[in-house]
Amino acid sequence: QVQLVESGGGLVQAGGSLRLSCAASGSFFSINAMGWYRQAPGKQRELVAIINSGDSTNYADSVKGRFTISRDNAKNTVYLQMNSLKPEDTAVYYCRVVVDIIDYWGQGTQVTVSS
Image (cartoon, rainbow, N blue to C red; front, side, top):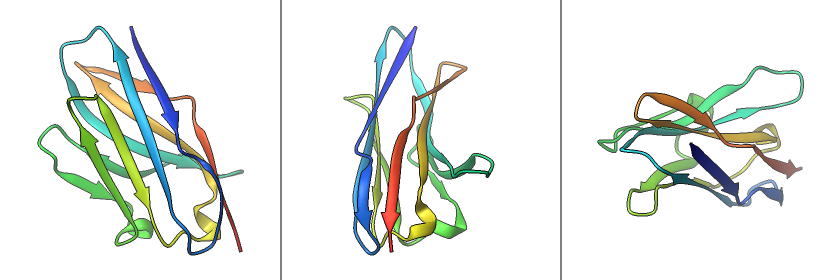
């Protein structure tokens, strides 16, 4: 079994920054892709950013140039550095980790950006 613990959400003013973390623990062989998704009220969950085991990244167009995803394999942790935050970035952010061939999701962390 794999556990994911997210941290770093909160309330920030527009233009500010936040850094999200998601740490995976448990018994597993390898972590493949790690990513962040978000879901705003009344909207579907959407991909924000993803990084694979070779450190290739992919971002939603809406966050390119503002958000940076990274991972620390020694700590089994994925990060999302969010800069120049906008009110439309307000959502619950979920991390997703592919361990071996199985998807795991974090519990979600609220990010609120005030105008």
